[in-house]
Length: 256
Ligand SMILES: [Zn+2]
Ligand SMILES: [Zn+2]
Image (spheres, helix red, strand yellow):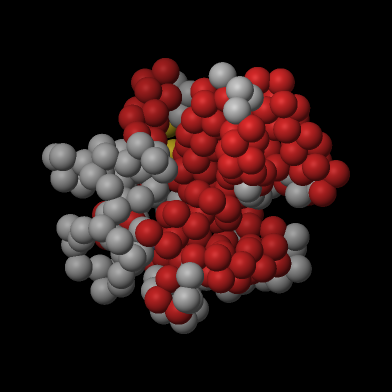
């Protein structure tokens, strides 16, 4: 039971990061009805729980990442840090400034992302709510865990699922793996079939084709989130936009 919960929480949390925060809030790769957007926004908060990220904070930070990839202005370039933890700590501070409206970025990075005060501020980023999520995860483990080490080593991951995904994608995706394209940055494709982070580790492909909703580029690559998008598109829940019809600042289309 705890394994199913762990795998389910891991995959759903990173799916909503990729599908909603990354491909919708930051890139607008598809359209949704206002009601569909609200449903997706709520589900994103629900599955990410204690480590929910606001679309505004995520989108601004990510647009900066595309525009300044692997330079000193990049909010998370592994080349400038001794380890993933140091990098993520710095990233968190910059994210907080944008998520809590404490700082404004360059105007070209603003706008086009959903904002919902109840979810983003009141529920999503309050410590009372984070602690409450922690209590829920802990109660689940104390009810269903069959070994003490599940509580010691698996439970803590649920509290910080979002930052763990962020560290894997932002550190490994610009450090380990192969390159299909010379992007003038250090982006890499870490896995050819990315079930670990639902397609987010195709950083090299994504930095080359910033507007492509499918992060896989070669025949042997599979991007799971794109497969989910195809199903949602076929069902009419979302309308995937062709790369040419996406109205995005230049750095988001093509970083090279
Ligand atoms: Zn992106
Ligand atoms: Zn990247």
